[in-house]
Amino acid sequence: MSETDRPSVLFVCVKNGGKSQMAAGLMRKLAGEAVDVYSAGTEPGGAVNELSAQALLEVGVDIAGERPTAVDYELARKVDLVVTLGREVRLDALPGTRVENWDTDEPSERGIDGLERMRLVRDDIAERVQQLMDDFTEAAAP
Image 1 (cartoon, rainbow, N blue to C red):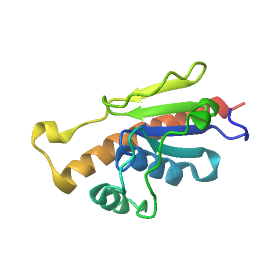
Image 2 (cartoon, rainbow, N blue to C red; image 1 turned 90 degrees about the vertical axis):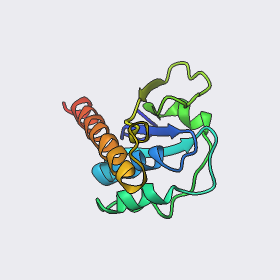
Image 3 (tube, rainbow, N blue to C red; image 1 turned 135 degrees about the horizontal axis):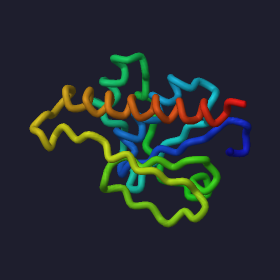
C-alpha cells in the first residue's frame, strides 16, 4: 500500500495527454477517494488531447483542466502499481514496484480515427480500469 491506507496507481503513457489521462480520469470517477490516482508521461506533451477529453466528457469525466506531467520516479517507486498504456512507453527500471502494461486497443491501425477512435480507446481503458478497481476491492476485503 501507499503511504495512505488506500491503494495507489500511476498511469503512464508517452505524452500524458491521452491514454494515461483517460485511465486516471476513469479511475477517479470509479474509485472516488478510495484510490490514490496519478498520471504522467515519459515525454509529456503540451496539453490534454481534445478528442480524449471529449470522449471522456460523454461518460461524465472531465479532464480538460489536467496538464501533462513528466514521470516522477520517486512517486513511481512509492505507488502500489504503475500501469503503462501502449507499446511505446519506456520507463527506467523500478525494482520492487509492480509494473503492468496495458497494450490498449489502437483503432487507427484499423483505419478508425477521430472521435470514434477515442471512444473505442476509452471503452477499452474503462474495462481495464473496472477490472483493476475490482482487484483493489478484493485485496482490501477482510
